[in-house]
Image 1: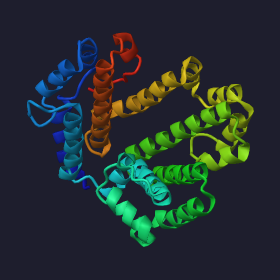
Image 2 (image 1 turned 90 degrees about the horizontal axis):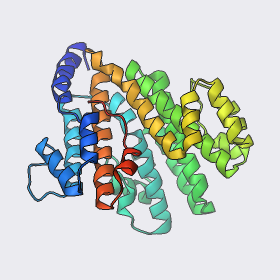
Image 3 (image 1 turned 180 degrees about the vertical axis):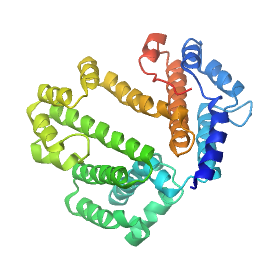
Length: 323
C-alpha cells in the first residue's frame, strides 16, 4: 500500500476502534448470569447480523467474516495477510495429509482460507499437485506426505510442518519491509519456541527432537534453549531469565494456563503502541488482532456461562483488551 492509502485506511480504523470492547465491557460480561445475556449484550453493540434468533456461533462467525471483508476493503496486501494467516495455512496442510492418510473425514480440523481451505488443500494432496501450493510449501508438502505414508509417524509430521510454519514466520520477520509485521512475526516465533521448550522439558524429549522443533529466531539462541529444555524446567527458567523473560518465568511457575495468558497479553501490549501510529500497517493489523482477541474472549465467556463456570474461573481465562 502507498503512504496515502495507509492514511485513509488508518483513518477508517480509528473510527472502528471506538466500537472495540474494553476491559470494563469484559468485566460486565463476566458478571452476567447467562450465555444469552452476554449474547444480547454483544448484539446490542452491533455484533452479528441483527437477527433475533442468532446463536453464539452464528454471531461470532459473522464477526470473523466481517473482519476478513474489512481487510479486503482496506486493500491490505499479501505481505501482511500471509503473516496473519500463515498458521492456518500450514495447519490445513497438516490436516489434509492426515485425512488423506487415514481416510477419515474431519471437516472441523480445517480453518477457512480463501485459497487453501479444506476442499482446495485436499484436492492438492490427493492429486499430488504440489505446484499449486506457495513455492515455499511445495517440497515440504511432498516430503510430509511421503513421511506419513511410509512411516505413519504423526508426531514427526507435526514437528516437520510446525517447524516449517515457524521458519516461514521468521523469514517474514527477517525480510519484511513493514516494521510492525516484522516485529509481530518475530514475537510469534519467540513465544512458540518458549512453549515448545517448556513442553519438551516436561515430557523429557531428546535433544535432537527439541532442536528439530525449535525455529531459529533473532531474539535468543535456540540451540542453548534446546540444551536447557533437554535438562529440565529449571534450566529453561534460567535461560529465559537471562534472555529477559523474567515475567514469563513467573507465569510458568504459577501454571501453564497463566503462561498462556502471559503470551497473549505480551502480544497485546506490543500492539497497544499502534494507537498512536498514523501511517503504516500497524494500526490496521493491531485492530484485526484486537478483534480476533475479542471474538476469542466472547466465546470463552459464553461457553463458560453455558457450562456453569464461576465468575472467578472465567476471570482467570480472559485477556487484556485493546479497546
